Image (cartoon, rainbow, N blue to C red; front, side, top):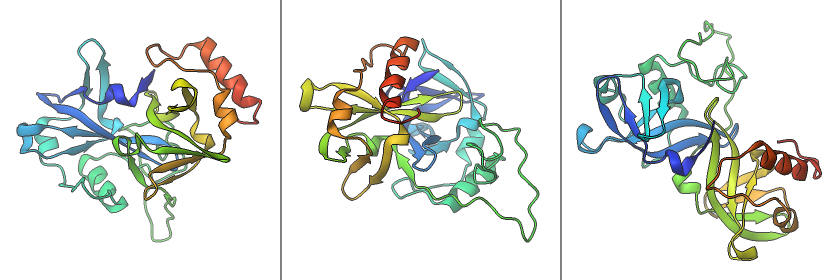
Length: 247
């Protein structure tokens, strides 16, 4: 199912024995454009700490209640490694979290989730030896909240800003970035595949895409009030295929 990152923010996270607060933000890696963690804000339940929850630990989502099941106990989460989320999360900290929970680390193997294409607590990491080589992760973890609002730089100018992200919850990969072209073209929203994103600049607060303003202008408009249906998906695919992109 395709989900809006904005919509996921605010969902309640339900541990096996009690609710643990709400989704406060999301962290994705800017190499494979995949959601790696939900940031939970437990509030007074855990002395104001914010904690990282991998999609590996997520169970079903209950749309009507805006709640997602987490296959962990409240105490297990409470005793997790303390990480200052005001600072960038290092790979060493990620590995510490995965080791604590017993989650396989996505840095081993070439799949989207290491050895598998989907997040799985049952994946077995390879036995490490002195000459084992871990896949080098050339990525940064980015906050969805931080990147939302970044300006869009095209190959021939600049327009609009990042409005949202569309995530596929089967593997938690970001399928589209939502671009609001405001103030051009009366605020038309269009979807851009990560394949068309060249770079993210923290200092400049911008996302560079390999598209011209005209190519974005001519993309089919997206209405976020409705799900992405097969007809719209086909129109979007046809538009970008004509530009030699595969999405």
